[in-house]
Image (tube, rainbow, N blue to C red; front, side, top):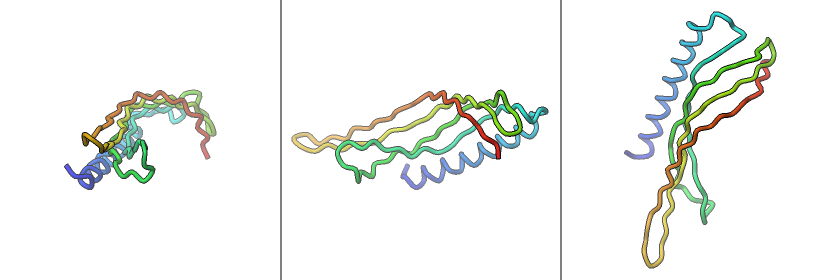
Length: 117
């Protein structure tokens, strides 16, 4: 699968997930001060080894759950649990030419301070 097709597929998937998330939030949230939901997006990552102008980016995705606690009109604490794919590809030359792919998977647990404008 070529890079442009992967990018279009992941972008379409991201839009669909965001649309579904908004629909679920509108239907399942009777209390507007506390929120739970799903989120997703597109990752484009690269790992620079020797050459900063390296163009071997990996297209991936991220997705997970979030919740807002201690929520008020202007502030909330938002913990999230996200799965994310990142990585790169490196080509080595010399006596033996080789290609090494780094396919990294992360489980992130950020806690955000949300200020509502």
